[in-house]
Amino acid sequence: MKVTLLYAFVLLFTFSSYAQNKYEGEIKAFEEQDKTNPPVKDPILFVGSSSLRLWSDIKEAFPDKPVLNRGFGGSTLTDVSYYYKRLIPVYKPKQIVIYCGENDIAGGKSAKDTYMEFFKLYAKIRKDMPQVPVLFISAKPAPSRWAKRAEMQEFNRLVSSFLDGEEDADYLDVWPVMLNADLRPEPTLYKSDSLHMTPEGYRRWAEVIKPLLVD
Image (cartoon, rainbow, N blue to C red):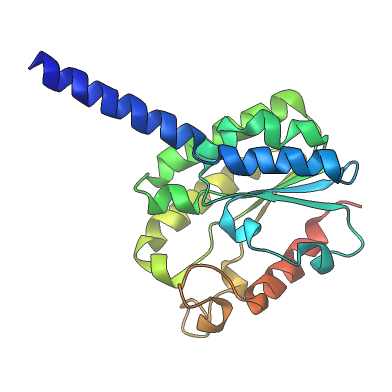
């Protein structure tokens, strides 16, 4: 019995360590890139999961803005919080744009637990940067995750309700520009994996994000 419990503990510790460090290579790559090619000063910092990481032409989408993209892996809000110091305050951003939370729910977390992970991240930001504007992009309606839509929308509702009472914070609901006339995800906005977006999906995002970016 003792051996079994010890083995279970070792497995749990190993998994937790892996979960917290699995994106270490990507974060180090950002840091090396910053040394050889210093990022723009006072950037509008986009941070979050693969929907940002794969936005390859994000600078072209906002040509008159000092955009810096730090989307990584298939990250969760827990991952962003774990790498917070190395991802956000180090760049001294003048605005922070977050897209994250979708993977948390897809991985089995409830809307409430995912919201609490967002709250923890937001609290860190506000502690270090109390007046830096924050823009949160809602979890999108991906076809491959349509079965999770109720949980996604509840998470979105919780974040929206909270940010509505915050100064220097905005919430952007992308569902209206990503659903078709049948109120289903528009297929042309998604790649063959029914999860990540096509250029048209990013074009629609850019249209609704641009008015919310600071000068």
